[in-house]
Image 1 (cartoon, rainbow, N blue to C red):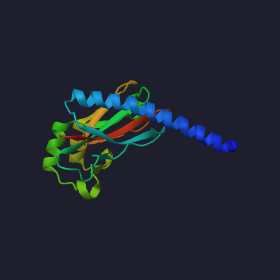
Image 2: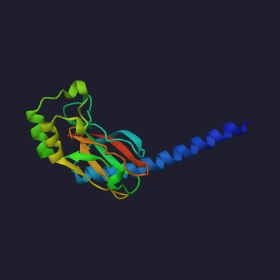
Image 3: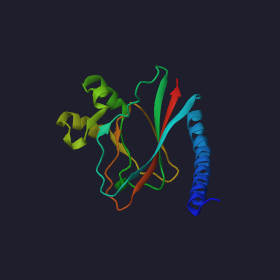
Length: 178
């Protein structure tokens, strides 16, 4: 005969497995649709994290998400899925326009291997580099159901949460065969 705590633990694990299975099916549908529309047929989910950004949390350093050592024919994509409406004051992800950043990558030296792709906090950058990032900066509000998608070489950072609400989102990592 099982103890009350053993039964409770098994019930919780069963519920967790059910929720995980249901979420996995829905997430797979969403990701399949995204990559189908982008004409990318071969992809796989490699990671998922729930992020909670609390009120008063400062802006992240500007960075690129390093893919690690991937095969030459694989590109890593990151999908951000807000779990609620996200106003600008909640600090949604800040992106930097690729045409400007492509020039930055070409003309500026930064050690992406050793530094993990970290540029630094916007206000601590040298004046000329800061001007480049300010001119490329874009940030958007999100509605529940919106997503953002970026590649491993996309410069970005999480914004400061100046609200009194926790900003929650799923951060999904997918590898796509080119």
